[in-house]
Each structure stands twice: as structure tokens, then as C-alpha cells.
Length: 640
Ligand code: ADP
View 1: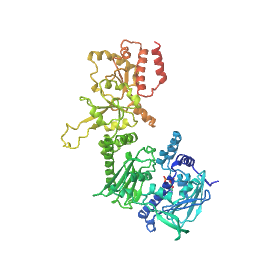
View 2: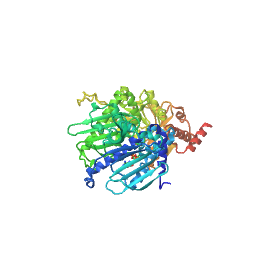
View 3: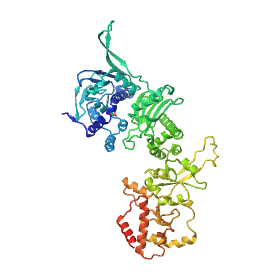
View 4: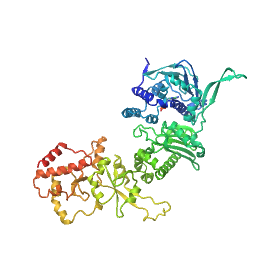
């Protein structure tokens, strides 16, 4: 019985990994080497940034060795580093629990999916535990830099682990895998070299392999063996190499290691800036959006290096939050090595690099939109939403982002851009119209669209929850002036439109005159009757010019939140918000409305008015306040 039990999540994760990644089990070595490399990065950082570590003699390296034993289950594989190491508490915390709370969601999602998508696991980065695919016992002997005690963590990867006092001459960690019978294939010089070359060739620290080589005499007879140690990775930081020297495979292979992804990236951007600032960046966009990118504790995937020394991957300021799906490297020549993390936030050099990188990425996204339909569609399906976040977070790039976001439309299939919408606008059309609040189907069926459809005016269907907020903050769309025309006085060329929500009062001016005066006068008493019957339930009742077939619809007053937005805010916990009432618009030509003209029975007028309001709410996907009352009124009307 082990001294310490694993957290339940760990046991579930172990189980999942072993069963879903088994066909790709060699990645365990990449994971352990990445951990060793991270540990070296951390210590290297301390030796430049922290006086307490300045005098440490530090010759960073990763050593792999193996022992092959013909007895079943007696072979071992050892990965050692002289990095930061772990003390007793850290061994328990890092290897016995899952610190990141995103993991729990991830596990639930996986369990839901039942079809255990191994890509998802790859994306998440299985880490240390993947070694239990090839080992039935693992020992980690570790000594933390700056401390004297060493500790040994042992586990069979089933229920728990033990920690006991141990010996280690220097700081660092030694991971000893006791290989299973099938795992024995990795106690082999060629397979280790092959896996390291494939996955970890660009790890910045030297990786050595120690093995025994047989020696032969003149007659070709075996005379013994000699222990040799070779370096097996090239160790060049790929982002520092010239683009011309690199192939797609080099970039993709590096990405898999960096992003803990088993899939290839959607695309990459490699930049070398020379001039006032000198830096290299290598960015990747994953094919699938990181599953946890909407979690509060999401860790962005860009690492900062200074002159090839790793500084941090934990800085939310390296990239704007809306670009948090981007993975990659920023390596600067100009930042001081011992730059503190607090100073980073206001550092001008970093700010310049960041701005340059955002512009570069935006340019790259645009190029994808223009030149690669297939990849662009994948991009939109994964990243349309973070781009929209950029619309309200990143004011200086708003115009460029606005060219990239895509919406659905009442007249065309699939995605459309604002530029495409503008090119289809009717010559006398004054505004760009959109509808928000509900799923695509509900919105497309909304009575609010009827008159626009009848007039052939396209309406953008904004079915994403956040559309309401972002689009009202955007306000206008300006068609970019074609390059070359930027003379400044080309107002005739640069067109600009207001974005108008069709579910607001005042967005109907293009739909023609209300009615002739006489007809309007005639319907006035009907409006008054409805208004009286509904009382406090509505802000106003008006004659509509946007309805064709439906008897009624609701709109929000010009500066009020829509009903859907209120519903959403409440669902998000804003319960103290006052109810802001909608405006009811009625269709004077509709028989139900026209029928009220000669009706005097107040109870019946109240029934009709109530149903006109409730059905208008229902069709927009809004909850009716008093469903029982609605049903009663409806039944009374039906039975007459
Ligand atoms: P990840 O590397 O994705 O965080 P792992 O399960 O691989 O997840 O590792 C968990 C943690 O254990 C690491 O974050 C690190 O703190 C610690 N760790 C693992 N291997 C080493 C090592 N060789 N040296 C120091 N710390 C390590």
C-alpha cells in the first residue's frame, strides 16, 4: 500500500492516457525530455536573474541511458537532468496531483465524448504520466537547486506513490523507468535516437545517450564492450535559423514538441526583425482551438526568450488576450537577461515586439483569407470568436480585425465578411443591418426580418452570445480604401456605414412610410387599446413598418439592452438588473390586429393584446414571464 494516494483526477487521467494514447506511446520520451528541458530553463533563468544562484557552476545537459535485461520486466530507461530539481513537497505536488484546474473540465469533456479523441489528449499535454504506458514502476530521484536533501518518489502508477529520503550529488532529477515487457523495445540505442531526433531535436540543451558498444578483434571476434556517450540532438533553436534552411517538417516537428500537440499546426509565421530592435518570433496557430481557452486559468502558449535563454511562458502580457490561442516563441536581443517579470509589463522593447507581432499575425490571417480557402475556413470555425473579442479589446487594430471576422447572413449561405456584405448592398441602402439574440434558426425566422426580406435587404445574422456586446461597441464599418488611393481627400471612395440592429427602434427608416395618414389615424385607437391593456408590461406600443406576415414583434428602445441581452446578463448572475421593457410593434394589416378595431369587450382585448406580446417574445426565444396566463388567454381565444 502506497503512503500517498493519487488525487482522483490523476487516477482517471492515467487510465485515459494508457488506453487512448497507446498506439502513439513513444511520445513518453518527448514528454520527459521536455520536462527536463523546462527544468534546465528554470535553473538557467535563476543563474542570471537571482544573485543566490550566480555562483552555481552550471553545465546544462540531459542524459539518457538504458539497461537491457533479458529477464521479463527487468529493463530500465533513465532520463537525468541537472536542472532546477524538486524538493519533497514539490515531488508530491507536481507528480501526485493535477495542479491545473482545467484538467478536471478536460477529463469530463473526454468522458462525455466517449470516443476518447487522442488529439485532444495530445493538445492538453499528457506530461509525466505518459511514461506509465511503458513502465510499471517509476522512480524519480530529485534534488532541488540550492538545497542539500534529495528525495525519491516511487510509484506503480496505480493508486499512489511513496516518497523517501535519497542521495544525489548535484541538483536535478533522475527519472528511472522500470519498463514493462512491451516497453523493453525502448531499451535500445536506435529507437531512443530515432525518437529524440523526431521530437526533441531542437531542444536547446544537449541530450546525451550512453550505451555499450561491442568491440571486436582483428579476426572479427567479439572481445568485449566499451561504454560510449554521444550527443544525439542538434540543439539549435529553430527560430534562430534562416528560413531558407528550414523545411515545413522542421517547423511542424518543433510545434508538436512546443505545443504538446500530436497534430500539425494550421500554419506558422516565422519572422526575424533587424533594425532598431532585433528579435525573432515563431508563431503557430493550432488546427484546433485549445479546449480550455475560455477558462479563467488558461495558460497562453507563447514563451519569451532573451538571447536564447528562456525567461517566462507565464506572462499574460506577451500577447493580447484575444490572441491567446497562438503558440510560439519570442526571442529578443535587446531585453536584459535579468529582466524581472514585473518590469516586463511596462517594458517598451517588449511592447514594440508585441505590437509588431500582432500586426504580423493580422497580416498573415488576412493572407490566409485571401489565398487559402480551406485553411481559412478552419481558422474561422475555430477562431472567429477570439477575433471578435479583439474588436473590443484592441482598439488600435479594430479596423484590421473587422475585416477578418465573419458573420452569417439572411441571404447567403455560410460565412460572410462586412466587405462582402457592403459589395452586395442595394445602391440606395443607407445602413448595414444585423439581428442578434438567439440561435441561427430563431433569428432567421424572426418576424423582424420580414420587411427587410421583402425589400431584398440583407441582414447579418449574429447568433453568437457575444455579438450583441461587441457589435454595438463597434458602431460603424468603413470600407478600407484600396492601397494607392490613400490620398486623404477621397471621401467619395471611402464609404462608411452605420451598423444597425433590426431589433431596435429606429432601424426601420428605410422600410418606407408607415401608412397614409388616414390609415394611420384609423389604427390609432387600436394601438391605444393595446397599450392600455398591456400597461406596465411594455415601454410603448407602435405601428410597425417592418412586419409583413406576422401580427407583432418586439424591439428595444434605441439605447436599451435587448431582451435577449437582459436574459443573458441575468443568466450570468446579474440578478439585480432592473427589467427594461420592450416596445411592442403591431402590424396594422394583420387580421388579428385589425380585428381589434370594433372590439369593445375589455377582457377579450386584454387576451388578444397579451397573446400578441407573448408570441412576439416567444418567437425571439425569450421566456414568457407567466406561461400559465399566456395559455389561459390563448385557450379562451381559441374556444370562442
Ligand atoms: P507539465 O510538464 O505539462 O506541467 P508533467 O506532468 O509533465 O506536466 O509535470 C508536472 C510537473 O512536475 C511539472 O510542471 C514540473 O513542475 C514537475 N517536473 C516534472 N519533471 C521534472 C523535472 N525533470 N525536473 C523538475 N521538475 C519536474
